Length: 319
Image (tube, rainbow, N blue to C red; front, side, top):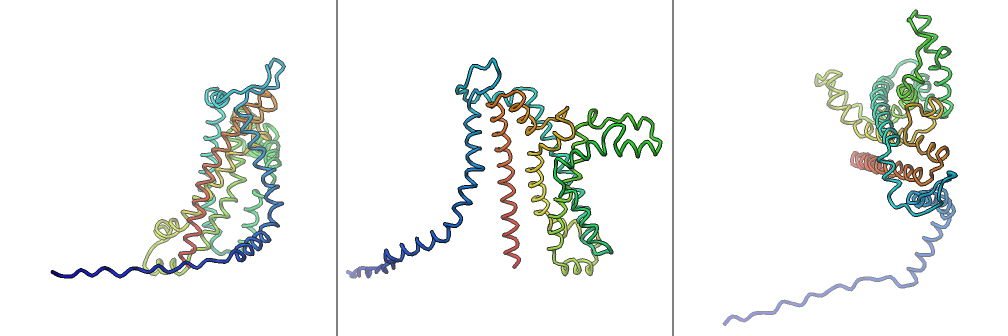
């Protein structure tokens, strides 16, 4: 009968452990590094998180400052139900979606075309680039007042004056701000946010390897084939990033609606929050609207962070 030999016992290497003194020293060193950041962290929490917590609490309260109000009480989800069932608030949500899609879509296309032009060397490119960036540097409310009173004002604006000089019949009667308020807002925001997207796309274009484009030209690819099969895939993530960031800013836009139309047939969610809080003095519903805006912005911002992370990953892989 064959003898069975028992397997040799396996020896487990002892895990090296640090003495407690080293852990204490490491904790003291890490605290020294983080301590200077504590004032900034406290300031950030006080300025951003505490107001949001207060807004979240108010969104579940029946809280109104109207003379016939019965006082404050817990309302549960009634304020959110009001937000999604009241026609005026539904209209504000639809206006926000409509204007955001139009503004971001047109701005992205214009920004891509301008970035492609500025990516090529020509005399005066630096001056043109500076002039293209200028609209983005203007304070939003100042830009809204400028467009509302200086360019689109009926009878006195630049557009009416130019059309009148060209002999267009009825040019003095075109009322952009009252007859086409959403179009007026969209034109102004496209003018202001196209440079922002253009900067991102231009950075993406200038990061493309010129040797790859030269090789494509040697292989017989024309400009359109090079753009579709090489340039566009390269700037796709930059385009996504500009669209997502532009969407975040446009959804939260309040200055342009206030400065140009005062909400006339163009009320978006931020302006609805303003009217509900300061005019209707319904703090609970206004807070619920604010929470809806924050949640929507967080969803878009999460997507933006993923796009940025993928960009950084691709850059590291390329190196």
